[in-house]
Length: 148
Length: 148
Length: 148
Length: 148
Image (cartoon, rainbow over the protein chains, first blue to last red):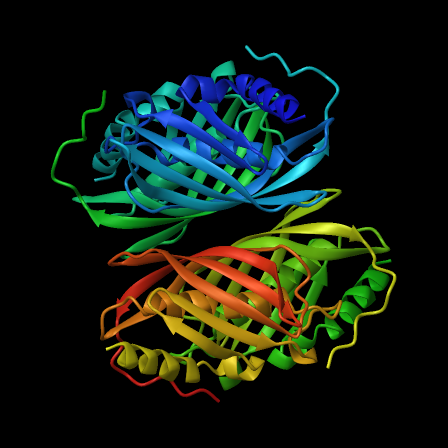
């Protein structure tokens, strides 16, 4: 069961072209909690050389989405309804680690806490914190749409 | 003056490694309003083939940030304090267009409205809407940090 | 039909003990848009004598909730999922006017734009702006619970 | 010092007409954490007899504001920049308890986590969760404005 859930989430994550393009990896999957790591590199920066709020948010959004998904029934899918994120400190470090944690699981809506840490030489700093609402929808039967 | 502001924003945008990596382009700069376009392609998708909320948010965040920046004095810089975004519809289309518009300009804090449209064959659909808080800080004298 | 909707909303508003206690009145009901007025008085202030963010938010939340409700089918009810609000300027004036406007109506979730104006001698200033997510639920058959 | 801070916060809370009008009491003040209690009664309800999201938010906003204020220097004042709150469950119980906790303290901006619990016979349920941004401003020398 647990293995099936892990496999389902890893397969979904593999299909996220953005996560691969950014170089993000899913490093922890547990019921109600998922962690995603993003190595720092020039491709994810903003104008001052820090990690861009958009990249920081992207891994936070995916971490929260999959954290919710771990608690959903089979044959369902997860969509982000909305999220809010505060950028608390410059996003620096060897890599960022986003942690999504389910705060309230519901039949239709689930709410997650989002945290992003900058990690440098094993030292962690909270660089962003947020809150996210997700919806559980019936799995769409069709295959993922092909894109150019 | 206007030209100087446009040049300042284009130079800053050029330094955003993430925008280049995603393939985003700044297409409109006016006082209090900036538009950024993101062509749809596999590198920016989520698991269903739509544009990932993280990519949608990234261009919305940059559009709002630069919209605020158009109204800031010289020798200052802009940082995102926080934003909130609702994903209203699947982000599909030939490209997305993010529009950042200043709602309230302040000496320290500025608030922007964020909108993202999916554009297909000239038809526009609102796919995301949000609100963002930005802070005006004294320009950091040092050069952008080099990253691996 | 329109009259039935207006009556349904006014009856619901009458049951909101908080709105009556604050002195708020519903002044406009149209499909997808509702306006609520709150006269300034000592009972709604914060420590500097301005209207408290909590009172400002309360009328914004009710305005958005009823704006969504105007578009819901009969035998349903509305609940606020979440909202975000920026306090843009000191909330002063003879009265505040909150405007809730539907941005995206959905079968399950509806998103509203929230605006609150301070009105003094007919002059309006935007004092707060936000965004809200609401959910349409089957009408609960039971009567409103009695409270002490 | 600690006593001075407690006295400063209690005096400010006393000036919040809305808190008194709602019947809210400040029950805990510690560095970076403040708790406010709101007894359930008809004056704070929405249309179903639960506590109105506006009242729930009002005590959450005040709890977070004062939590930030505990860490501010003397001769400064606190203003809410914005907040976001999810209503997670019907706000029921003998009373609500709002907890504001500083997540990140800054010289200009401070970010708080907001939680509201419904308490019935000693049993606590999380009914709302949010995040708030506050700004530290120089104390306004004038007295609180008088209102009708």
